[in-house]
Structure formats: C-alpha cells, structure tokens
Image (cartoon, rainbow, N blue to C red; front, side, top):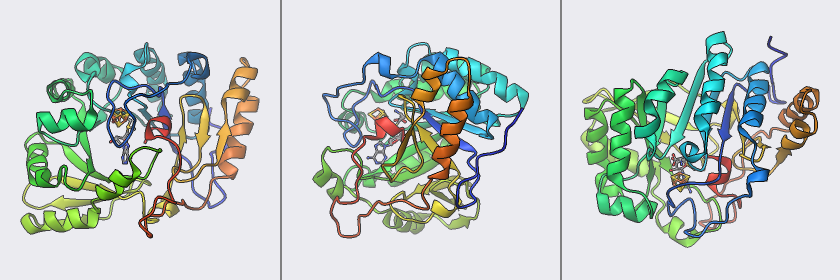
Length: 336
Ligand code: SAM
Ligand code: SF4
C-alpha cells in the first residue's frame, strides 16, 4: 500500500532517499575526514532493523530510489542483512532502484551478494589511478584493493560508475587517463566539484578548487562533447563523448542550477533527515521511530512535517572566495 506521496511546498515530489548507514570508514580522504576522527557511539546509530523500518516507511510514502552511503556503507557490520531486507520492496515493484556509493575497498567481498539482493549499479569513488597519489589522498586506502573490487563488481554484473573529485594540481594531469580507462572498462564517469564541507583544510580546499567548467574545456580539446538533456533530479549534468560513446557527468553542487528539480532528501546514520545538502535544517526521525516501536504514525507525521520545510534552494557560496558558505558537517555524516 502506498500512502499519499511526499510533495514539498514547491511541488517537488520526493522520490529519492540517500541513506548514510555509518559514519565510519576504512579510508581517511583528505577532503572528507581528518585523520583522527571521533565516531558516534553505537547507541546513537539506527540499528539494522530501524534502518529497515525507516526506509520501508519512505518507500511506502513514494520513495522509489534508495542510495546507501556513509562513511563507507560496506564497513557497517551486518549491512547485507539490510540490503537483503530491501529486496522485498524491489520485488514488490514499489522500490525501483537500490544502489550504493562506495570507496570500493570491500566490493571484492560483497559484489556477488549485492547483485543477488537486487543491486544493479554502484558508484565507486576513485580520484586517481596512481598508487602513490591514491595512498596520499585516501591516507589509508590502497588502489589495488579498489581495482580488485571494481573487477569483482563488473564480474558480478553490476554496472559501475566512477565518481572522481576534481582537484586542481592533484588529478588535473589524469583527466585523459581516467577518461580512457573508464571508456575501456565501459564505465561512466562523473566529476565532482570539491565542496566546502566540514572544518578541515579549508584553505587547502580552496587552493585545490578546480572548476568543472575548466575541466570541461580541457575535455573539449580532445573530444567532441554533446550535451545530454537527461536530468536525474540531482546536481549532475551530462555530456557524451562522441569518440568513445561514454557519458561524463559533472556535479557542481555549489551552483544553484539544480534546486528546482530536486527530488531528494538525506537521512544520516543517526536518523536525522536533511532536506537540503546545503542547509542546516534537520528533522529528528529517530525519536518518533524509537518511541513507537510498533506504530509508524508518529514517524510518518514527522517525515511529512519535515518535507513541508524543504527549502527552495541551498546556501553554498564560493563567490567571494571565502568559506562563509560552508556548512559545518562532514560529508561522511550526511553521506555526500
Ligand atoms: N565512502 C563512500 C565513498 O567514498 O564513495 C561513500 C561516502 S562519500 C562521503 C560520498 C562521496 O562524497 C564520495 O564520492 C566522495 O568523493 C565525496 N566527497 C567527500 N567529501 C567531499 C568534498 N569535500 N567535496 C566533494 N565531494 C566529496
Ligand atoms: Fe571514507 Fe568516502 Fe569519506 Fe573517503 S570520501 S573518507 S572513502 S567516506
């Protein structure tokens, strides 16, 4: 049974939920986390059963796409129990897509199980194809492990998309290498503009800011780019490279060019709902969930009240080259 769908005050239907299932990670990417992170106590996290109830309620309210993220979703203990629980919504046809964003370190172990659970696509974050640079940017990651994970994912029948954060002076020189590598492996590629999130290395981050319009101009020197009109309701815009046939995405979250079609909300691993990535307004969904273990009425009411407050647009601002527009959360908290 589907209840009345979630429609926000700007007539946008909310059909896409991103869910962070942990704040922990086996990497320490420099733009995302500090090396010494203090993670949340376990009691604050939604249990796997609570995650199931929460996501199932959203599906009942019309959410058709779930993207599982983190932290690193595949380091959450028992996470396959949750994926397997979501399979019933795929089978019922109420959920159209179950997917995840991962750093790929655990994919070797989980790819076949994820496919069996009904996952068909994964986003793997990878900023460089150089072993040394990979170890530098992720601090704790090893490139070979991630490549093994991507191999396993493709072998299991998962479609892989690579997400790369565009960093001036870091992977600028790999633009064509990464593009060709993705083309050879039949993987789409999306470049993400670095965001002023969290409280670490802001000066560095502004230094490393590589505007995607510059990246796109460099791509156009070698390839013929055709703009694709397709939109996903998210911040990505796509072009097709005529020479390779491949689709390249650009995510520029700092510009206001996608808010009007925004169809998504984000749930943190503690059950807070962020209605907009760029704003601080948040709704606590854990209390109504925990306080009424057998009855979803309070939870549904809290979700509806939150969607009523979804803002028209977000507040990032790089325009004065300061960090004023940043919000103080880490990406690992809201799940990117
Ligand atoms: N651990 C998983 C991963 O790395 O794919 C999922 C969570 S991670 C927070 C989600 C995405 O956010 C990754 O693609 C990562 O590169 C991106 N990200 C993290 N910090 C960022 C920042 N400051 N600016 C832009 N993207 C960022
Ligand atoms: Fe971990 Fe992903 Fe953040 Fe890197 S970007 S530290 S892999 S959560």
